[in-house]
Length: 264
Image (cartoon, rainbow, N blue to C red; front, top):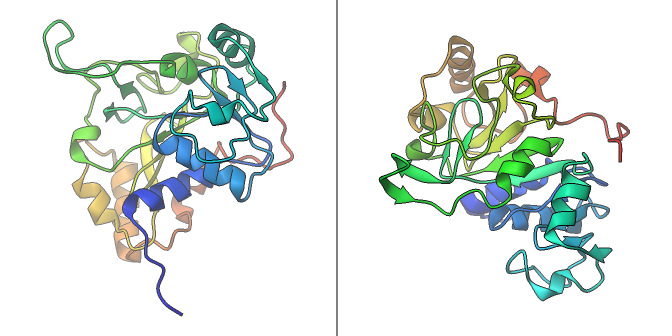
C-alpha cells in the first residue's frame, strides 16, 4: 500500500475538522476554517449547521464556497437573514456551539491579535481587524483557533487584544461578563494546544510525524513547569501518532459526550 502524502496545511485542516461534532451549530470562519467545516460536514458530521457571517444559516453548498458571501451558500440553506440577526438572535442568545477563529498573534491565554503589530497609533503593520471575531470569541459556546505553528504567532503577550481568550487567566472571562466558553483549542500544523486549569494553553497533542521539540522551538512564550514537564515526556515518546497524549486528557472540556445537547 502506497504512503498517503499530505501537506502541513491539510493535516491542520483535518485535525480541526475532527473537533466538530455531528449536530453542532458552527460559525464558519474564512480561509482554512471554511475548509475544516465543509470537510466535517462531508464526512463525520452531515448534520453540522453552518452559519456564515453574511447571513446564511444552515448552508448546504453544492461546491466549496470561495468566501463567506459566495452565492452557492444561499441555495438550499435553511434561511438567509441580516447580519444583525446572525449576531443578535443567534450568537448572543447562545445558539452557536462553535466559532472558528484565526489571527496574527495568539498569546498563552488564547487571546488573539488581528488588529496591529506595534503601537496602535503608529503600527508597524495594520492588520484586517476583528470582523465578527470579537463577538464570536465572547459568545460562542466553544472557540477553536487555526494557525501555522510559527514563533512570531506565539508571543508571551499579544500587542493588541482583538478577541478575548482567558484574558489573564482563569476567571477573567467571567469578570469581564463574557458568557462563551472561550478558546478551547489551538490547532497548528504541529499539534493541538488546550487550556489547563489556569487558562494557559498547553500542548496536548502532536500530529503524525511531528515532535514536541519542533513545537518547543517555535514558541516565544515562556512555558510553565507543567508545560515543560509535558514537553519532556512527549519528547521521550517520539513523533506524534495523531492520538491525544494521555498526560492532559482531563483538559478536553470541549469534547463532551455527543448526547450532551446545548440549549437552543
